Length: 293
Length: 228
Image (cartoon, rainbow over all chains, first blue to last red; front, side, top):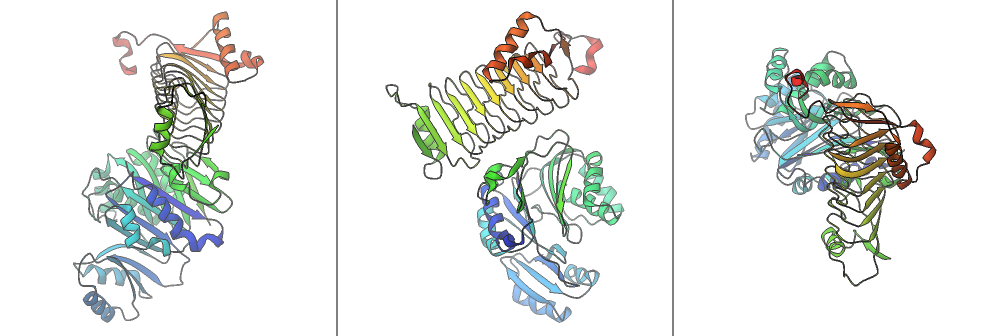
């Protein structure tokens, strides 16, 4: 099953409410995915400064913080539940290799705009643990997982981020992910888990690194990705949604002059302002819809 | 009229009330407010009554309905009126997938569009869609009538049995064993009565085409193996 949600704000006045709105959307989707949850929040880019969302599990954060600060002099570390966000001016290549040298750290995602958090447990608890309601930003994506083809771990949770400021959530299952994983690995795309969605995220990263737009990449994906899917994908510029040609996996979009909300079911967005006056539609099978600046 | 508020009362409480009406009561008109996309609203009603739902509804709205008349002033999710036996369901907005799936009887009217698989495996229901329907509509439809005032997506009427499809627009493609039929007087009268049910101008009648089963897949035939 799984529940997916996305929210793109057109009106800046709601930026401060992004976390609050997404909390409601994820809570309402907890019935579709009680095993784990995660979300990605995009906020205004900071020039040259990169943010690294890192899961430290149950390790000693004080010690990690101390050691990291030695290696990354300007490191600003914000701890939220079992994650922390590290902010630095240092080049990503350097920072990523430092993070990788710690066996007890998992890089969940990085970029100039994105912050990602994911955790095992009921979505209601997960969003509370990360205090999602306090986040502000321009757009966001969330996922509630009912695990099917890989283990219930943080690694198996969505969103998946395989490139700078990219992320992907998925409702469905892919059937050709093993083959595609091998092909992408040969192209130098790093895929850490056995999960099918991470392969799709890697596929998108590969497309974007070849100077294709998110929309073009998702259109290519319609012929290269086999299986059932509704994908919501984000970049720092916006969101896109696509459903496979069979369209078994649900999706509904509500668009007003202030925002675009996407969810597996309408009930996820029933609490959003003026949603009853929104233009509400289901994305057509095999068509890519995108919103962004 | 009795007002029911899903923000105050639980869905289960509201459904139980409607499913277990006092048989002696004549007060059989209900309005449900704040549906907020909840699932299975008005599922399993079995008595004559009028229910109006003000707002958008989730999955399986008025599923298994018998005798009741349910109106939704909004959109509905997957499987509205699925397995309906009798009565009527009128959706003033759009419907999602599998509208009227497997339904044995009654009438489903959708003022907007429906997405894929409208009337899948229908077994006697009359479905009238004033807009368009998505792909695989009337898939394996056994009996009953599907009226489409707009267009249809791919594979309309795939593996259809004895249901009838009337369409004003164009199907994007026909499914296996579905073919265009000539309408005789009886079919025209039937369509006229269906249009009347949905308050559609009878003069529209001449714009409709009829589709049904070519009956080539009823018995196994090696020449049709690719179609099975």
